[in-house]
Image 1 (cartoon, helix red, strand yellow):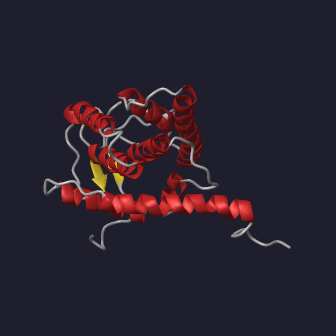
Image 2 (tube, rainbow, N blue to C red):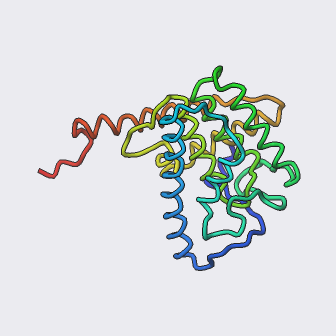
Length: 226
C-alpha cells in the first residue's frame, strides 16, 4: 500500500449534478444515507416476513442507488453512461458498455453460491466487486456498503441489532475499508480472487456492532453522568 496515496477513493466522471451548493448537497447526502439504510432494512424484512427465497437482481441494486442519489444526480438509479476514474486508487474500472454484464455476473455469483458460501464471504464479495465494477458515476461506495449489509442480514436470517452498524463504522474510519478494497484489487490484477482482508474487516466490524448491543443492555461503555 502506497503511504502517499490519499486516504480516500472518489469517482471522477461527468455527472449531471442537481445540487451545486456544498452545504445543501451535504445535507441531502446525509438525508439520503438514512433513507438508503431504511430501504435496505425494509428489503431484508420483506424477505424474512414473507419467507420468499432471496435472489439478487439488478433492480435491487439500482433501487438502492436511486435512493442514495435522489435529488442529487440525474443519473440516480442508472448505470454510468461513460468511463470513470477513481481518485486515490490504482484500479481502472471497465468501460461503461461492460457494466450491465459485469453486474449480472456479480449477481450470478451471489445467487449460485448462496447456499455454499458464508454470509461474511458474500458480504465481502459484494463490498469489493461492486466497487471494482464501479457501475455508477457516483454513490458506488454507499451502494456497495448497504447492499453488503443487506446480504449479510439475509444470510443470517435476521436484522442485525446494534446502535452502530457495519456501514456506520466504515463511514467513521474508511482507511481499513479502502485498504481492503485495494488489496483485493491488487490480487485480482494477478488473475485471482482473495477477499480475506475484506472478510477479516467485516468480522471485526460485526463484532463491534454486536458489542454495542451488549453495551446498551449492560450500560457498560456509556458515559457515567452520575
